[in-house]
Image (cartoon, rainbow, N blue to C red; front, side):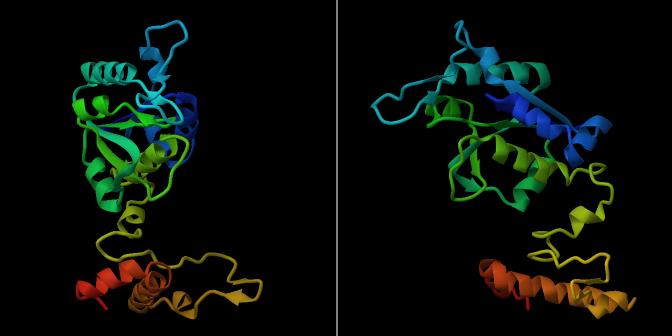
Length: 234
């Protein structure tokens, strides 16, 4: 059973998300294990201090290395070595291929920082891999950590109710983006469902979906459309 560990200053925020939806069902079924570890539990002073002023001056506070180091060591003593990722806007963008790689890991540790940053020494000594959701900055790493966890977890067999949902998603090997989806009612405020979807002709439906996926890429993600064209696609 894959284990995901999130190191955070706000475990209650992580745990509330883990109680609902696909992840909540997977945790309750025992398909995956997820633990949110409070970095404050690894402090040594009565104020449970996890941050301090940066050397060299500047705004904000920096997470101290000691609580992070001790938390990582405790987790790995209890459960074994983890692949270690730190949520960092300076890191490489997290993509679907990374989600597939994490889904194959037995143990993954996600470090969610806060404040101005994390002491660089602990990141280097424990060989954390910096990853980001994109070129923007958040107040903390909990949301990116949960996004990456969910992206990986839904690829693990047994997490989704229908395994085809993961196979046919955007960014799979079959297409760059997912096709549009429709359900009841057949007409919504004068806008009808495309007739091909009502035809029962599965070959025609598949062809239409592939065309729509390409059209969406050209409209919303021209970078992906160009990449597909360079690879010999239509």
